[in-house]
Amino acid sequence: MPRTPPIPRVLRSPLIAAVIASALLVTARAIPAQLPARIRKPALAPCTVRGLSGDVRCGTVRVPENRARPHGRQIDLRVVVARATGAAREPDPFVLLAGGPGQAGTQMGEFATTAFGRVRERRDLVLIDARGTGRSNGLACAMLRRPEDLGAWTMFPPASVRLCRDSLRTVADLAQYTTAAIADDLEAVRRTFGWPALNLYGTSYGTRLALVYLRRHPRGARTVVLKAVAPPSLIAPMNYAEDAERAFGLLVRDCRAEPVCAAAFPDPRADLDTVLARAAAGAIRAVVPRGADTTIADTVRLSRDAVAATLMTALQSSGSRARLPMLLHQAAAAEAEPLAALVVQIRQALSAQEIAVGMHLSVSCGEDARKLDTAGARRADGRTFLGGARVRMLAAACQDWAAPPATPGAYDPVRSAVPVLLVSGDLDPNTPPRHAEAALRLLPNGRHVVLRGVAHGWSNVAACGSAFVADFVARASTRDLELTCADVSSAPPFVTPARRP
View (tube, rainbow, N blue to C red):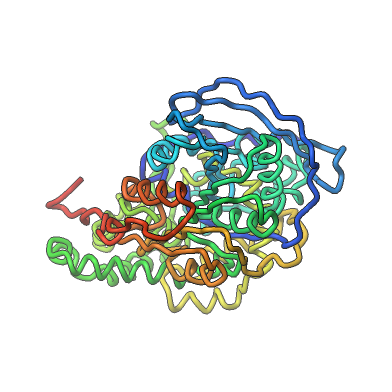
């Protein structure tokens, strides 16, 4: 069967860029795999990577797909090195670990430049496509193939999951795409380039990868920054209902505290309940263009699960969060087109941008899905707006996926003396501060910083974060960091009819 082609890219808005970084969370075994002691250093050639300027070079590092079979199929890991801009260059680079799982590290060029320009003054920035993403044997598939899929209860239609699985089996052993294997790949890259140690930045799923790397290769890291923290004890998406409910409660609080929002939308919770009831009754519909021909469109019903799951995703971005009270109020008053358009936009982007669904499912099904409590998720249906929607999606998809085997110690917490800076947004709907606090207990040289007015993304605090991250990496210490900016809310004002962006 031919390999399933990915859906074309769509909607490169700041909102979608922030949304794609959403975290699904995994871990790995505690016993490091054996890696070759001597590896030939690869050549790097000048290249162009979106968002990166200056001296940028690309290369590959070849690793076995299955380390138990070192002479079997090989994977060429794409590595991008953006050389330090200053005259004094330190030998230990700053390595960015992408989220998802399924986002390619080399997609982070623009973010790396915005957030870590100060770090780059003295250290190379390194972006790596993890196995199964980007150009490292990327396992991309289309999921939402039909117009009706955009409004269905799941992001993973069973027929699409099976087609994806069967097509990718021709180019990959899906059981080898795990967090443990990616952590060992990272160590192979470090050794290949002869770097004495790494300074790691992980976002969302990347935080889990960074923690697993610390456990498997404790001498490989000099410093670690964890943004939107996902410790091994966190089994996503089991926490999503509770944490998204908390985030929506904060939205209600903040709207009521802002006179313009409170006057325009006096009861966002009642609006939400009305909207979800209308979706459950099949009364919310969206117009979806049929393929590239925008003159032909289909009208699809949006399920309750589709609407609820999309609202959680919208809460991940401070910018999209600011629009929600107005969208919900309009939809509750039977003007649902703007909200329906947002649901379709986010679902198309999650399916079509550079999230490698095959890698995503291998990681999530092999690790998180083993701990899902579907009965507990059903009980959340009556207590929270999200309920068990995200749990149902993953559990159903994993029934048809070739999940990797369980790994011993996968859910154990990570203990390390490496300096670790943990950063949370107080408005985050899926990795709020409580999860960073859980990880901090076994990190004696760690420090947790909570940023006000920040959700899951970093975009609205890049200037603030870039300063204290650069200071932390330069000194390899969490002491005496200048964190005044963390206490200043960066949340944008709510959008109202009288105050549109």
